Length: 195
Image (cartoon, rainbow, N blue to C red; front, top):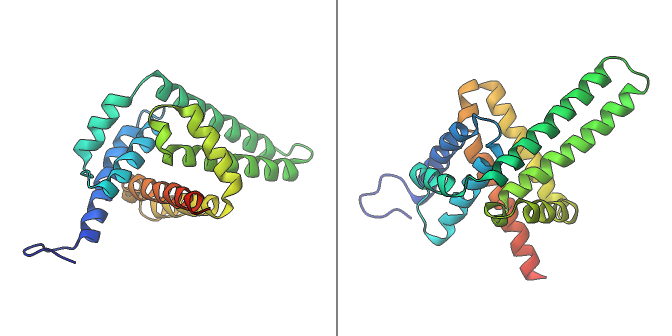
């Protein structure tokens, strides 16, 4: 429902906020080692909308500045190293080694699992202070909540498809991706509370 004098409703306002946080996240991700911290901060800012905290790029950068620490950069370096090892494995499989199709399939499954756990860790609130706890919880959730893990894979595929179809959308994709990761975590937390 719109307030008097408001041109757009609250859903459109949230959509605009998600896009502005997406642009801020894309800018913060440029050094590559900051990707987990940037995405985790975006999820935290979007999670704040549920308790009427402002969802703005200014709040995003303020929170990112306060929390960017050695552990965040180490998490980013680890994620980058994992992706480089995965890319090397895929390149080796493409080189025609014996057993390459099986190796490529196994590498794809392991890589997908790593990405899902990493992204689910970014969506967890504890990623703001303790990456180990966030990754442990995300690993448990990835196995216990297969539907949520499937939603994470679909969110990544959608973001990649949008970026592939129209390159400027790559700068907006982190916002909806962070919203999806936050929604998957909130969905899982609500399901745990109900049981």
